[in-house]
Amino acid sequence: MEAKIYKVADIPPKKIHEGCFTRLVAGQKALISFLRIEPKTLFPVHQHSHEQLMIVVEGEIEEIVEQKPCLLRKGDVIVLPSNIEHGGRTLDSPCEIIDIFSPPREDYLKL
Image 1 (spheres, one colour):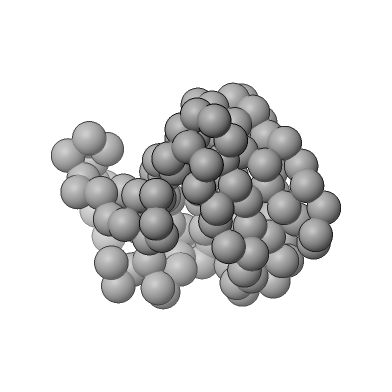
Image 2 (spheres, one colour):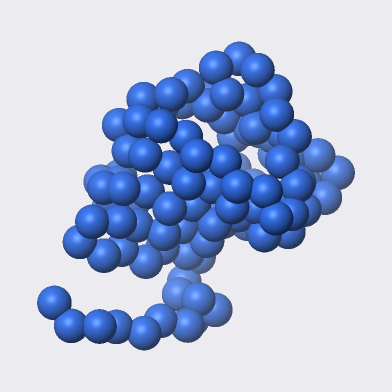
C-alpha cells in the first residue's frame, strides 16, 4: 500500500444520523471519522466491536458511557474499549470530533 494524502475539506460529508455528518478516511487497520454534530443532537446508545478513540476538537458533548454521563470539552480524549455501551448528546452548540476506530468499521466503509 502506498501513502495517500487527503484534504479533509475535500472529502464529501456523509450523514450517519440526524444532525450528525462525517468525513471518513480508512487505512488497512484503522478508520478516522471527522464528525460535526449539530446542537441538541442525540446520538443513540450503541456498542460495536471496534476500539474507539474520541477527540473533541470544538464544542462539548455529554457522552453516556455504560449509563454514566461524562461531559467532554475541547481537548478531551476518551478511549472506548470494544463492546462498551455508549452514546451522547450535544448541548447548545455544535461539536466537532475526531473518532478513530480499529479495526475500520464495516458499516462506515460502506458509506
